[in-house]
Image (cartoon, rainbow, N blue to C red):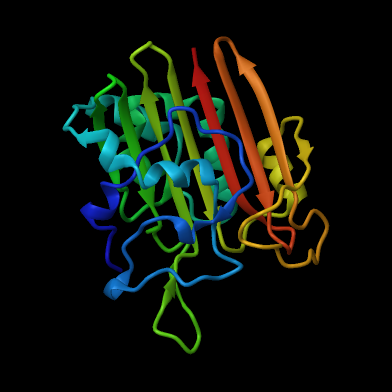
Length: 262
């Protein structure tokens, strides 16, 4: 499988403040496909929130890549906290650890070794950039996972579909505040609502559905199908939240984690 190209990765950045939003198909995101193929428009595509999508396309205008150093020892410390997932459930458990321990706020989380371990990535797609306004960003975008979320061929066509996509990163603002987030979407195979709640815990609140420019989802065929729930809490000076969405079959299809350290 061909890795994401540097040109595609160079378009990736994360919003200074990732706003809460209903997920939309990840077909809006740039990515390199095998043989130069494009994402096919599918109703069951991985889900990525539009707040991230809008900033992915503007990265070349707001920043330039830099080679900022990260302590290898710090990266190894992060690796010890989480092990490489082999199933979607283990993947969600890793996201829970990342949320609880505020790992997205640490520069040493964004080493290739740490990201490969946390998300079972074949290609991490990391870029670091200093912006004209003094903000410093670390961004990652990838749809190339090792076996756990393989690319699939669309029957009767020469197109491939990524079965999962991850976008995330951290912004250290000139003011001293730090924001970070990760948005992960998978096409199918995620845990159901009860399994997800057992893994994530927390007092999730149901979010009323909002109109989508991509049309209505498929009719729900299982409990909690097409629902979105959100959990928020404050740890010290860190405000954090998890937003989870389920596909029409009642399987977890999207997790959006947001952190703000004032």
